[in-house]
Length: 246
Image (tube, rainbow, N blue to C red; front, top):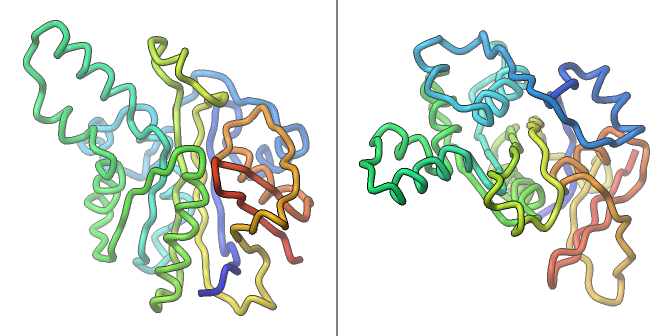
C-alpha cells in the first residue's frame, strides 16, 4: 500500500483562527490557540446542531467547509484522542452523585457520535469510522484513509479534532491541549508523484524529533501548512515520519 497522498482541499477552525489565511499566518508562528470562539455551524439544521457540544460543533464546521454540497459522498474518517470528553466527564460526575444518566447524553458521548450526526444531517451513505490512538491519532487517521483509498475510494475525508481536558484530568495530561479541528480531503496518487507521505521508520533510520508546544494533532496541521520537508514524531516504539515531496 502506497504511503503517498495528496490533499485536495482543507479547512480548519480554532479560537481566533477562522479561515485559511489566518491558519497560513499561524503556521509560521505556531502558538497555542486560546479563546472562547464557537463556530456558527449554520449549515446544519438547528434541531440537530443543538445536540452538539462545543467540540462537536467545531469538528462538523470544518467537515462542512471541506466537503461542500458540490463534493461527492465519500468515506469519512473522524479522529480524536479524547472525543467529547466534557460530556463524558459530566456523566461521570452525575454517576458519582447517584443521579440517573440521560440516554441522549450517553448516546451522544460515544466516539463515533459526532460523525454519525454529520452523516445523518447530510444523508450520506458512504462508510464512516472513528479512530483514537493516543498521541498518534493523526497518524492513525491517515493510515485508515490510505487503506480506503487502496480499496478503491476516489477520495476520503479526514476530520481531526480535540478539545480541552476537564480540570480534574490536568494531572494526567502528557501534552498541551487546545480546542481545534481540521479536515482534509485526500486522494490517492502514485508514490513518486505524491505531495505528502507518512511512514514508520526502522530504528536505524530514526531522526530526532523537534519538540513542540502544540498538541501533536495540531503540530501535524502546522507541518502541512508550512514549507518544512519532514516532521518526525516518536510515540513509544513507533517513529513516524511525515514528508513533503513538492
